[in-house]
Length: 110
Image 1: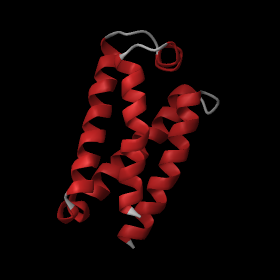
Image 2 (image 1 turned 45 degrees about the vertical axis):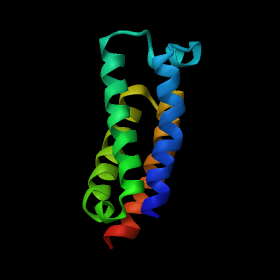
Image 3 (image 1 turned 180 degrees about the vertical axis):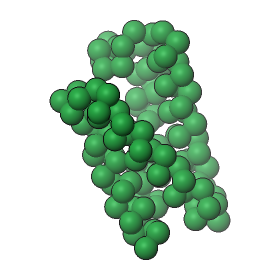
């Protein structure tokens, strides 16, 4: 289950990062204009994607670092729903990923 959550992180974040970095119209409408706040978000998403990829390639590190990464993601994704409203497309996607990561945490930590 941990591998699934990490793979979802990479699979979702690579195209999202591409859209943000290339300033695609869809990214601009969902995440706002290319300003410092969005570049900070790109940095955070890069960190999540890179750590997820490292943990996919380094199975020994998964039990130590995986739950912390997923816990942080669940918390910030739920906060983003409160901040954006549940109808926002980014918030809806965050809810889905938070649900998967929550199930993974329940399985891994029980």
